[in-house]
Length: 131
Image (cartoon, rainbow, N blue to C red; front, side, top):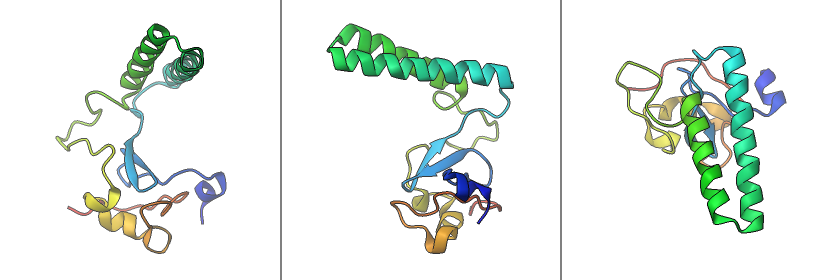
């Protein structure tokens, strides 16, 4: 296995658009973001998530709503939500089971067939998704 498996990173689709967690596709950040901007946005996302957790623990519904808005804005700026960052017309498959998408053949080749719960974690496989 490659270094990704040693780091415990989830697999990334061959086109780099998604990572797979528990068999589901999750959109990755826009790779065109500059390093400093990406770092700033990730820091804002983490701060917003901490604020959301604090609001939940305190029972402050207004603060929770504000924190959720911050999370959404940061994820949109990163390209993980909102309009897709690619321009070839491919649909957004976020939250879809990998086995029910054009990535099914790729996904099934991960870790001896890659099951829907943990299959394929930690490996990146190259090649084009099935059409």
